[in-house]
Every structure is written in C-alpha cells, then in structure tokens.
Image 1 (cartoon, rainbow, N blue to C red):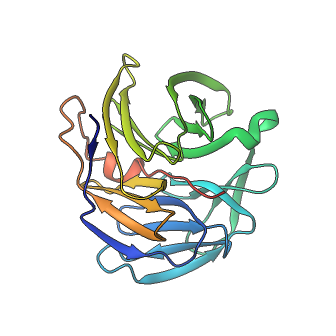
Image 2 (image 1 turned 135 degrees about the vertical axis):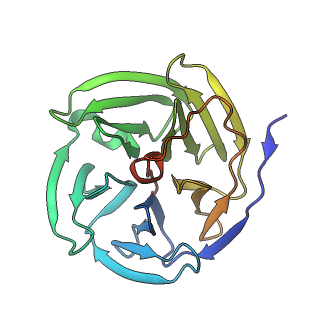
Image 3 (image 1 turned 90 degrees about the horizontal axis):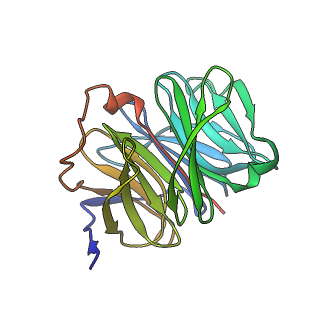
Length: 229
C-alpha cells in the first residue's frame, strides 16, 4: 500500500490556476496561469516579495542559478526570464511535441521535461537542445527535481510523489500526496508542491533518501516545476 504523506505547512496561493514551483536558494518562485505572473515568495511566511509578468503561463517552472525557466505560450515553449527585471533572456522552441511537455528541471549540463500524460521523461543538452536520453514510464510529470541519483516527480493524475534511479531506471520511492499536485521543487530540506485542488503551496518532509547522494549544489541547481491546465 502506498503511504500518504502529511503536509508540514502550507500557504494560500496568490492565484487560482497553480502552475510551477522553483527554488532559487533563498526564496520560492511560483507561476500562475490565471494571473500570468511569476511570484517570488518568502519561504518562511508565504509573503509575496515581488512579481514578474509572463504572458501565457502554461506548466513547468524551474531555475538554473541565473534565470527562471517557464513553460509558456501556444504552442508551449520554454522562456528563460531574468528574475530581477522580468526581461526575456532566451526562448527554446519545443517542436511538434510541444503540447505534450509539462514539468521542467535543469542541472549543470542538461534540462529535463516531463510528459503531461502517460509517457517518458526526456533529457536535453543545454548547448544545443538535442535529446540525450529518455527515462521512466510515468503517468505524468508535472513537477520534477533531481537529488543525487534520484529523479523525483509529481503526477497530478495519480496524486503521486515518486522517484526512480537515473542509473538503473528502477522506481525507488512512491507516495501519495494530499490534494492535486502540480508544480514541485526541493529546497534542500523539504519538497514543496502546488495543491491545485485547495489552492495552496504545501511543504512536505521527504522520506529517507537512502540511495541519493545529496550534494550541496542540489539546493541551488535542482529547482523544479509544473503546473497549469
């Protein structure tokens, strides 16, 4: 039987169309498709610190240490945004499968995209966007975070937080979440996810990550995402 995790704390979301979540090392970033904004939030209080306008917010959100990455537009594309001023830094077009893309996360050399429906997670090179690999067979992946060798994802359709080992492809952990999870990120101590049903941003303590080597850089570089319909 899959264990149901308990919410440690939660904050009301700024809007009603909850999309992605990302962690920049100091604060949470949250995107909402109803307001077309990215919100920087105090992780201790949920207070809005600042806002960035992003037209046509769609699904995933992540952070690469410099820029926010937001799925946006029709069809979907990845927009790299300067969090300080909201300026568009770069656009990554996603081709014929753009509308199937959902969750996002980024590491030092590649970025990962999760499917909106049953499918595989794809890894792409930062240098030229070519597909490097595919992994998993997941019900959906609205939010993603990599911690050591484990890739964690949330599935809205299954109300699930799960992980598989990138070295073996084997699923390692699986937990149910309260509400309907969309975007997700890891702040170095806990997961945060968007609960679309209850319009809340929720923190949960992670289960023991026995097979993951949690490096100090994970706190900054593994900031992940989803959301919106």
